[in-house]
Structures are given as C-alpha cells and as structure tokens.
Length: 219
Image (tube, rainbow, N blue to C red; front, side, top):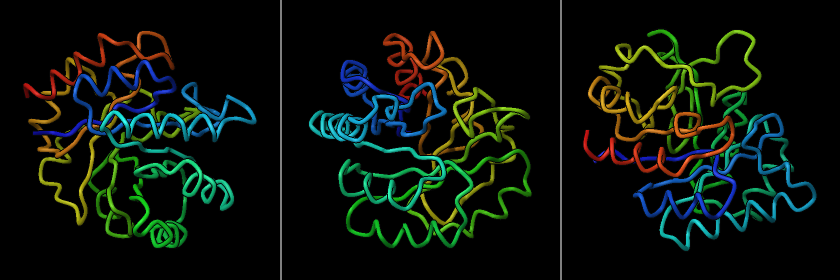
C-alpha cells in the first residue's frame, strides 16, 4: 500500500478529513511566503503549529513541520516546542547543516529533505543527504516564489529505476486523476500532495482530499 501525505493543512477540520480518509502524514507549513503558512498567525504561530501537530497525533496520523531555510533558532523551537513527528526541509539548506540537524533530531523525530528533480543527473546527488526520508519534488518553474507546492509535474520516467538509500516520497503536481499513473511509473512507496487537493490556492478541499486518497488506495 502506498502511503499518503497531505501537505499544507492549517485547520483542525481538514486534519480530521485527512485522518478519516486514511492519510499517513499531514504537513504543517511554517514558511512566510507560502499561502499555506501557519506562521501567518503572528505571535501565536508556533503555538498554533503545536496544537495542529498534537491534534493530528491524537487522530492517529503523523505530523510533519515544513520549513524553508530556517534559522537555527526557529529549527530548535519547532523541534522542541511544536514536537512534530518529522521536520521537512524544503529550501537550499547545505548538506553539512542538514546532517547536524539530523543528529539533533535523533530519538526525537525524523528529518526529511525535499529535493527538486528535473533530470537523471539530479538523482546522482541524493546520496549526499543524511536524513530519514527524501521527498522528490519537481524543480520549481522559472520565476516561482516557492520551492514547492507549484503544481509542477516531474518526468516520472527518470524515477522508474530510482532506489535511494532511505525511504522516499514522490511529490510534484499530483492530483486524484494522475496519481495512479505516477505510482505505476515510479513504484514510489509514498506520495505527497498539496496544490492538487485545493479548489483555491492555499485552501484545501474535502472532496479532493478524499478522492486523492481513494485513488492512491486503488492504484
């Protein structure tokens, strides 16, 4: 069975929908430039993130806090105050810093690294990452403001023989309509979706979340 992460959830109602539909992880975005950003809640942002993380865990699903090039202070606050099951780095964090944070996370939570891919050559660099999971995303379109959540689709054929050194998730433009084909083409053990289950940018849709998870289960 392919596992599912629904990313960019910012309210308890959609967390409940994702849990009831059978999601394995939910992503909580802590990135000021993202329309899915929990940091937009101001001074209470980390408290809001902690409440969402705890609520997800109460529902029986795992929480993933997503950050883009976080400061050391923010990373530490998220690790110890938000208490997610995983932290996902989605920026230009250098491998040596990622490795230090991976060690800091040991026995506390998993550390994931999202990497943009557009060609076979990009896969050759995966071994440099010392993390618990990799998230293979499409490289953002030229001029994009965000490193992910842009709806861009990877050429799945370059991943047909991909077998990394750690567990991984496939992201990038996945929808209820195309996710069965993506799973068949890549044999990915897990998928990640954000914009593909939104009716309006940054706002999740209950029916699309359920349709996406049903499509994964039936693939």
